[in-house]
Length: 319
Ligand code: GLU
Image (cartoon, rainbow, N blue to C red; front, side, top):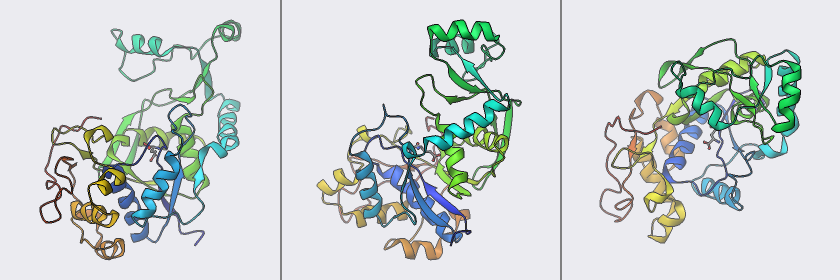
């Protein structure tokens, strides 16, 4: 199976998964399996501040409870730092990375200046001389940024179509030494033979910058499918504070993992019953193209009634 390509689900172990995350995982599995790919699970645990003890085991148990298992040993990013560092060194050797001494505040202020672009690094530290950098290093440990040669990049998304998004001098290694998400994802997807990325729509704008970074590293870009998120009735992205939205909470209310899987499948317009039954009729072209509205107060509250509201179009999804 080694050369069949792979899809993946790559959670950050910051807490339990909620039904929206689980739905994305189910979709990643369906996309992978329906195209003959392996399905891999990757634990994105580089940011130790966000990692919560025990969350990785909880998340893997939640995925297993739904029938989602990785076809290869689960990869933990914290165990692969040398390969991110090697990619970083390659970029540095080619003059494609530079030290940045800006604080968050500096970046925010520059972005809100008259000609600034919100969220777009203006290149303040791009051309600092060696003496200046040596001086600044004594004051602050630098981040490393990409010396981007483009303003934007375009990818094709199976669901969203052609997507062009800004690409700035994105951070490759943070000033606390942590490898940035965008670099780690690109390196790992290629290293693991992942050629299909299915994840939440909130990451759609990251795809062009990741594809650009992959092109600079000489790595292939995966096929993308960014899937609609789960939202509250008010149109806000679902969060754990919104009520009983994790398998543990729902089990406490008497809903089994199988019942939750059924609701997830139903929300996708797929038959309840099993992942395999859903796979047999899975057609990406027929997926709902709007968010899944989840109302925790009524979610799975009665065995007989509708477990959650039908998906309805909303344009109020917060990023
Ligand atoms: N680890 C990221 C998250 O949990 C997802 C990364 C990805 O799928 O590219 O939001």
